[in-house]
Amino acid sequence: MKVLELFSGMGGMHYALMDAGVTFEVVAALDISEVPNRVYRHNFPDVPHSAKNICGLTVRQWQQWAVEAVLMSPPCQPFTRQGHQKDTQDPRSQPLLHLLTLLPKVPTLKYILVENVKGFEESEARSKLIDTLKSMNFHWQEFLISPMDLGVPNSRLRYYLIGQSSELAFQFPTRSEIWTDTSSLRKFSTSLQTPAKLKSFLETNPPITSKLSDAMLLRYAEVMDIVTEESERSCCFTKSYGRYVEGTGSILQQSGDLDSVYRRFRALPKEDEAQRVAVLRELDLRFFTPREICRLMGFPEDFEFPPESTPIHRFRVLGNSLNVKVVSFLLQLLIPR
Image 1 (tube, rainbow, N blue to C red):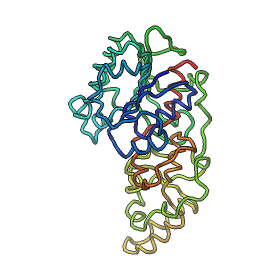
Image 2 (image 1 turned 90 degrees about the vertical axis):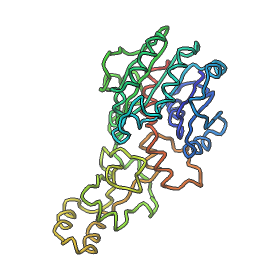
Image 3 (image 1 turned 90 degrees about the horizontal axis):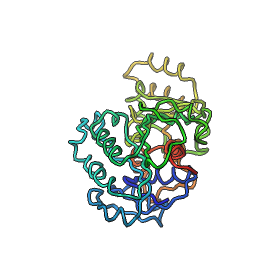
Image 4 (image 1 turned 180 degrees about the horizontal axis):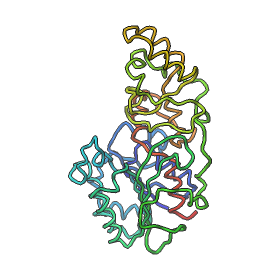
């Protein structure tokens, strides 16, 4: 099956295809961002890869590639509060809108998978996507899924759409509403599992640089989302993880009693910073490492970052990536094996 990867990032869609057991060839992978492109090329040096602007794609190129499946994760900023929810009026929606003019003109196309943030389902862009699929005589199913739904201890709720040509048939009963409960789809996929604990995703010897600084401990003590190796959950890791603490992802507690430490911490005067830090240090708090976040996001152990990439670069591309296991689950629903 000939696959076109659009907004390919660090290669999450490619790894999902491998995990799903699909026989495929990526005819091209495109993304305009150079940092994730370096990660993609490092892991898939033989895949035709380009930083070309997707708005420059033509029907002729698609027809030359004989694309059978397109997997895409368009920019999410137009559909987020931080991005002011400008939707189709946001210039960053232009690549998606351009693609919607091309899709009906590709006769070989059989499958489509789209990933985006929660909120896309209420957008004008989503309405245009659905109208395009209708014009192509495709049928589709929409989902709102978090890795937690598949037993992975990490929250990353995202919108997904899978669609296929009307000459094909889904192996599961579709619904007109957005699917949010994956448990009834267990028999159609190997991706669903019993909830796992964080300890199975942790490195044995994490670098000392993953520890929080004194300044971070004092500033963010009351807003950190703290988890332990026994936890069956963690918060969504964003591209700001490692630089900021509040709302960017969970912090790992490696020792001590959380309630006891915080009782003593709160009883100390704010002016006594040294003692307050010393109390918090009993918890041995640290950031999750890029490798641990890779594991939570479903990337295999042989995935590598380019050696020149820094931890901040790695957190940034991971924060913009997708969960491989969730996409693998959807590909198993979409494409017969």
